[in-house]
Image 1 (cartoon, rainbow, N blue to C red):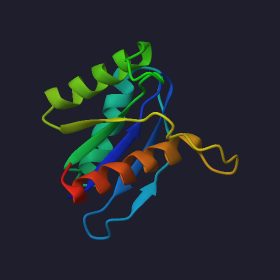
Image 2 (cartoon, rainbow, N blue to C red; image 1 turned 180 degrees about the horizontal axis):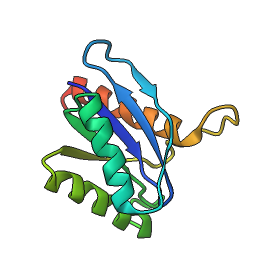
Image 3 (cartoon, rainbow, N blue to C red; image 1 turned 30 degrees about the vertical axis):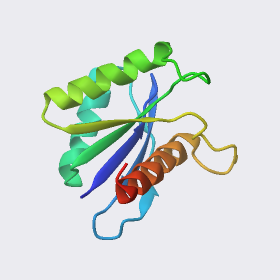
Image 4 (tube, rainbow, N blue to C red; image 1 turned 90 degrees about the vertical axis):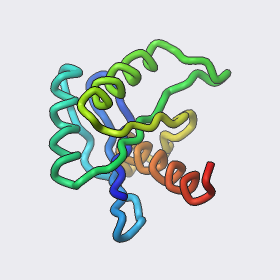
Amino acid sequence: MNILALDIGLRRTGVAFCSADTGVPIALSTVFHVSEDELISQILSLVKDRDIHTVVCGLPLLPGGEEGSQCIHVHSVAEALEDLGIHVSLLDERYSTPTLSDVDPDAAAACQLLLTFCDRQKRGS
């Protein structure tokens, strides 16, 4: 199963991809967008181009586990994708953004989401 992970922001979204063939997540280029519609359009292109079966969206919960204002945007994008027939899974993304300065933090966060998702799938949780 090919999986796409998204670290969704208001203007930029980190993207990672995991191929069913390799099982190894790779960070893709960060997607820059000015609207939710533009983001959805770019995600749809990735889904079609890479034969994606599942899209994992990071859910930016607050440190206490409750949903903050950014979660509204993520839910909106996830629902729009589901309305288009795409299987979406939400995953707690707290503490997934790396502190290394030489990597794209958005794409790396998406890659970390994908690693966590794949690990949970293997364990059946």
